[in-house]
Image 1 (cartoon, one colour):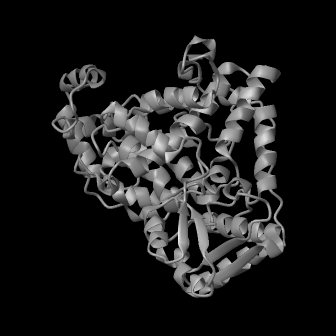
Image 2: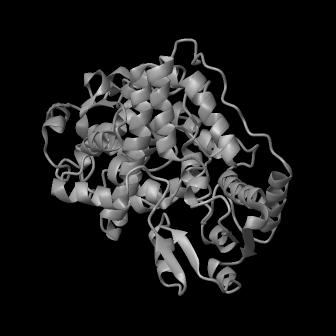
Length: 484
């Protein structure tokens, strides 16, 4: 089992012998966030300890070196990256099993996608998955009469600066975590580079911890998750989010079991349908969708750059130097990545991704950045999320318009703009919001690249009527990619 295939649903029976490999070369290859590296190693070593004599646990420089010590035939579930898939396919004596850890099979998705003839929208897949798995449906129709209740889940943050839910249960570090931290310290002295700050482990590394957090979320936080799912607060980074993305992506939790648990919370415990549907859409819909598009689309999709973004990531961004940034929203979100290796999906999309899109950062570099800086980041996760959604680098294979906005959206959905040196209503001048000004400069610079459609037509007409558009574009060119 790879280090992201750690749950019991990756085994056929409880006594099945297991080979686990810890490869040091993985951490030489790219600069991971220190807390992400800690979580991966902690989860792998905890699983080896849980399995005891059932597991062969090998620590080696590379997977290849470890496999030289193993003579018996092996089976492996379909890996989560093209690099790993190529590796196992080139090994004699290794049988490749179907993928696990996702609700819909690769074959079922391919059948669905082939029938769509190119129109692979998440909303259509989500409807198919709900019907296919019988989730929140009555016959073939959605419970409540609508497939998506997203419009009900867009409340701005509470005025008091906190969502009224109990804090999620936090893991308690043990001797394995101490060993991991000591090893990472030693590796750094040996020249392996990490980014971000070390800190207490905040995310589950065991099946027991992950299930405890899931149960707590379903019982105490799910109801508030829906309405405030898109809100951002500088005073409360967690809000009512489940904080389970890393647990799903490490394979500690079975996503379909979590979806069934949320459905049960609605049917038997009175959880609000909008909140339950929102959680189900994230897991059964979006998570599975980005997994499948990673494999269904050609490998070169990862390198799409149809908007011609050419700027390399600046040092302050790569190094998570939040203190170099004056813009309150960007500084706070970057600090969240630096200090926790996690922020929820809206800061990722509408602050980090939005800024990167406006400034023309290279999408392929962003895929790598999101992969390595987040505890839940993997190539399969970030290809669709960054290239297809956040950066619109494929001109709409999975979205109908760029996810780009000015400061007004951030002002409405957060507490960031009050007291910030920039004014979200201004696009020109020393106090012009870099998001508001960047929004119009981005549209002006890409007016000939962005395909015309009804969702963008009104905005484009509004842009052409701006009397100071040329001045805004010139101002943003001078700002460049300096920290705002």
